[in-house]
Amino acid sequence: MVVLNKIYTKTGDAGETALGNGARVAKHAMRVTAYGTADELNATVGVARLHAEGELDAQLMRIQNDLFDLGADLCRPDMEKDAESEYPPLRMTAEQVARLESEIDGMNAKLEPLRSFILPGGAPLAAHLHICRTVARRAERLAVELATMEAVNPEAVKYLNRLSDWFFVGARIANNTGKDDVLWVPGANR
Image 1 (cartoon, rainbow, N blue to C red):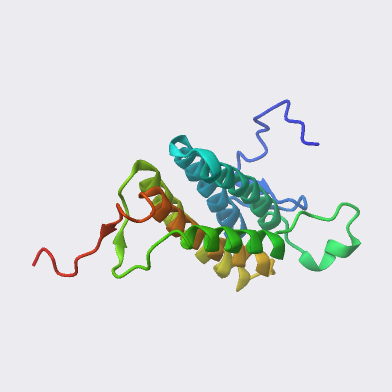
Image 2 (cartoon, rainbow, N blue to C red; image 1 turned 180 degrees about the vertical axis):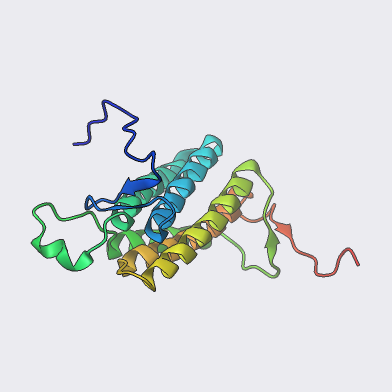
């Protein structure tokens, strides 16, 4: 159980922070940037949820919880030591990725096929989900970049990849099941 009885510790005042394994690193380290962006994504989902209701809201709440799992995964290096750890770290799983895929398939079944690219916008929830989508793509790029330097759980990267797709399809659902999507008209302002 997490107990936070003091919010500020002053241990980061010199520009360093602790990873999940206790190692101290610069606050601008790629690993910190990656899990910090997952946290930013979680905050954007929280704003989107202000406009969501019903099953879409419940799905977004599950995504928020998953994003905390993702942050816990990304903040813990040394994946090769997981098996020997007294308290194995939390890692993203194939089941979490599969759940997103199932939800995407369920939403997509309600939509007409796209015949044009769509512009981010429409209903307030759709617009917020498009912001979530772009932050998810950035988080994915950072996790992929981190993976070129250090070990990263492949399921974490897969999750971020599926998540941006989830936000795209979710935005279409929020736009009156695609009927209110804002279509891109190539060269319309020439």
